Image 1: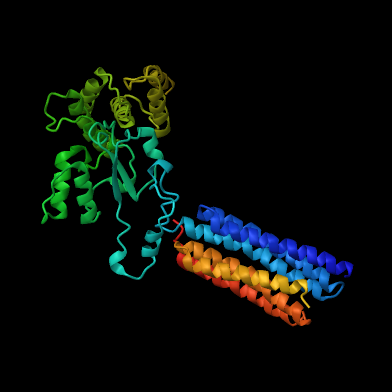
Image 2: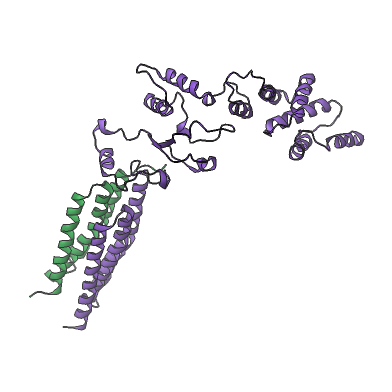
Length: 349
Length: 87
């Protein structure tokens, strides 16, 4: 027994032991990603030791470098392969929605083997997994701040009390797919309607189902006016269905929204000042809780339009600067220091 | 004469058989891909040990080198086919 023989024996035996241990890990580990890690690390180590043993057996020859080249190839390809498999697992649609749901929203089994097998079968009748699943639980409703973090287009979990006691302070950003619209399929609309508790007749069309949903929840109805979003938000927050129940706020805001649209179009021309001044007085008298920017801009535009006739120089940048300053300062929308600056400018000119 | 190369051969073949069985038994598709990828290294080492038992190592090294590269390419293709698109 030469020295090289003993060294190669020890190294090869160690490599074999490592390979056997990694195989046991490949079988017994609970999750796919742990198994992936074992394969990536354990196999390369075992190969390294065995190849070192072979190099010791050949001795000082040119062949030893070639044997080391084989190990180099294995060393380079194993991590790349594991990374690819990880990507294939994560972005596979039906692999437990591994990235798209939070832990409390995941299904309970870690391995759902039949789903992945069905997804990759060629049978068309079995590919119905992409429907969004509606799971009703007793958990409390998710708070508003958490809703924006959830990005779960596939599964929608509704609680029994959450959908009715929700109070929207405007149309917050829900994940795009939970809103009913004509773009969804009929099956999805039926599921949403049944989740809300509507009896859907069998022969109903998409429009009919949409109408039923909007009757239940008028806040989901999209606004037809193409004006700023503030108008639609505020009208959505007041759950008065008719809108004529003496809610001055909604009335003034609606007129404000109309004015905002018209003002944006005609801010460059000085349009009728009387209407603008009248509305500005209405909105200024009430301290509106929602300090929407369009309303403030509306007031500042009205102020500017009413006063620009007096001033000769009303450059856009200076007026915008004035409006931005007044936005930050006052709740009424009027700038406290506005009068002074206009008068100074007038004097300078 | 039982040298340690035969022991190595027997061990590697047994590992290979177990991997093939696990590939057929495990349900999720990606686990099977994992085993296919693990068999690459085992087969490469197997070729080398057969070379050592025969006495002429320099014939079997080139085969092992090319097999490792080809096996990597096939596993890449399989992963791309099985996996989903990056969203």
